[in-house]
Length: 320
Image 1 (cartoon, rainbow, N blue to C red):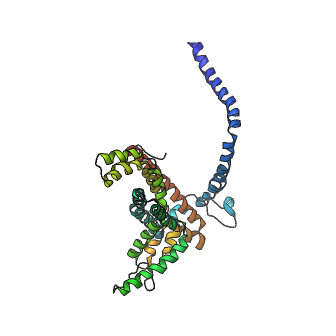
Image 2 (cartoon, rainbow, N blue to C red):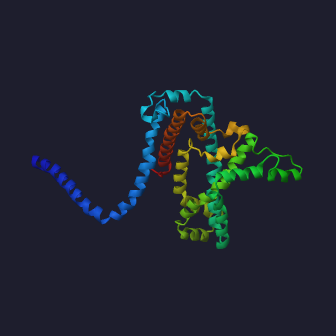
Image 3 (cartoon, rainbow, N blue to C red):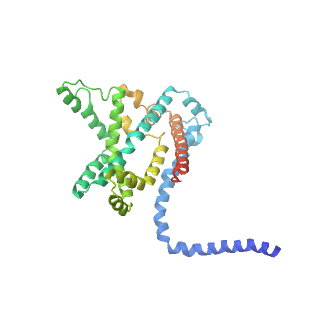
C-alpha cells in the first residue's frame, strides 16, 4: 500500500512532464493560430488593460501637473463627495430610467422585425426591406441629431408644420420633457432596430425547416408556428442579448442624450455619460469623472453577473 501511494505522485509527475514535452510540437504545429491571436491580445493589453492604471485617479487628489504617480492618495474621499451631489443622483436616475425604457421598448423591436422579415416570401422585397432597415445604424448621431431638429422642431420642424396645416397646434417634441422622452425612444428604435435583426435572423437560419412543415401539416397557423417554433428556436440568443443589455443598465452612450438633449429637458436628458463629460472636460474634475466611471463599471459587473445567475437558474442558459 505504501509503495502504491509513493507511485501516485510519480505518475502525476510523469503526466506533467509528458504534457510539457508535447506542448512544443503542438505549438509548432499550430503556430499560425497563435500568431493570429497575438494581435488581438496585444490590442487588449495596450488599449484595454493598460489604461486601467488611470483608474487610480479616482482614489487620488489628481493634479494635472503632478501626474498620476505623484498625485497624493485620498482614499474614498472622492466617492464620498460624489454621493453628496444632487446632480449625480439626477444623472443616475435618468440613466436607469432611459435604459429601462430602452429595454422595454427597444429590445423587443429587432425581435419583432426579424420575425416579420423571416416570414416574408418575396426574396427581392425582403432584401430591399433589410437594406432600408439597416441604413440608420451607419448614420452618425450628430447627423441624426440634425435630422431630429429639422423634423421635430417646435416652430420649423416638418412634423409641426404638417400638423399646423391640419389645424393641430405645434407639439414641443424637443422642449417638453415628456414629449422629448418619446422622441428619444423613437429615435433610438429607428436607429438600432434594423441592425439588431441581423443576429436574430442568423439564429433563425439554424431552426430545422422540417418543424415548420410538420406544424403546417398538423394545422398550425402562422402565428402558432412563430410562437411555438421560431421564438423558442431563438430563445438562447434572446437570453444572451438580454443578459448583456441588463449589464449595461448603468452604462449609456454619450452621443444620443447629448445631441438630442438640451437645457429645457435636462431634467431627463442629463445622464451619467454627460455628467462625466461635464465633470472631466468642462470643470476639470478628473478624479470625480474617473470615480463615476469606476462606479459604473462595478455596478455594471454586478448587474451582468446577477442577471446571468438568474438566467441560468430559470432557463439553464447564460453567457458565463
